[in-house]
Amino acid sequence: MLNNLSAFADQILFLNLFRYITFRTGGAMITALVISFILGPILIEWLKKHQQGGQPIRDDGPESHILTKAGTPTMGGFLILIALILSTALWADLGNGYIWAALGVTIGYGIIGFIDDYLKVTKRDHKGLSGKLKLFLQIIIALAAALWIMKLTRDPLSTSLAIPFFKDVLLDLGWFFIPFAAFVMVGASNAVNLTDGLDGLAIGPVLIAAAVFGIITYLTGNSVFSNYLQVHYVPGAGELSIFLGALMGASLGFLWYNAPPAMVFMGDTGSLSLGGALGTVSVITKHELVLALVGGLFVLETVSVIVQVISYKLTGRRVFQMAPLHHHFEKKGWAEPTIVIRFWIIATILALAGLATLKLR
Image (cartoon, rainbow, N blue to C red; front, side, top):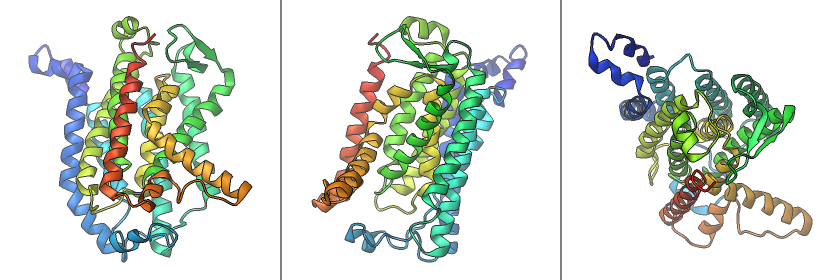
């Protein structure tokens, strides 16, 4: 929206700044952070008032959670969504179709998460929305977004998968691109959801991944830089840097309230939408495989659950004391802040490895 002010740069030279993606990305980040700080205390008090008992705690979870997390309100992801949406609408070019694709998936998954959280709170049951129904709704939204992205992207990238480390390799998936892209979005969404189990655990790696993809979107959307780095140029993708800047600001603002001991949980409202946002951006920029590296921590958490379920069904034995992986370390006696910080370190290392793929061609 504010990018339209650059049309008056001939009269007011300062307004020329609104042409630049870097300036608007910084503006979106600061705006989202300020919104989070202003609305955070108000929203948390409202959630406490209307969620008697806070988020239901699983009986089969770590025993310490019953004592330390009982009564903490959930749906804090609503704060992230408000800050993200308002900041993006203010600073981004709303004529850019990729912005609407990213917002569409983020809002759609946020609504699914909100319904799930609402059912958990009102029914006082940690199960919430049916897993099959939740997955079905996610797939429908992802398929629609994938089709839209395919229409927006020029050939041959529209239906292709780029392979990291190889500058000229494109694997044309044809119409299979749509289910593949949907798988990336749904998978990323649920991977972040599985990681969200400790105070600050999920939002930190989301923030790190958003920063990495903020750089990736800017470079892939710039013909000069993409040519220099020999990555595939995606016209219009650079505008997503503003979306990711807003996501970073909103995540930082939420972390202020979610740092141990958390004043509020993001709930599925936040985790499903944030994962979906990252997955959508990776599809648009043709860095789906890089997301698996940058978001490697989310992959590890997901794999730990899959391994646990398969092992128990086939052998009756558990590989981990409890899944997802962070609960395993809780059971081993690690303190919660220790797990969170060490997982953040792992996420940072993986993010740096993901950035390295931009130059290793």
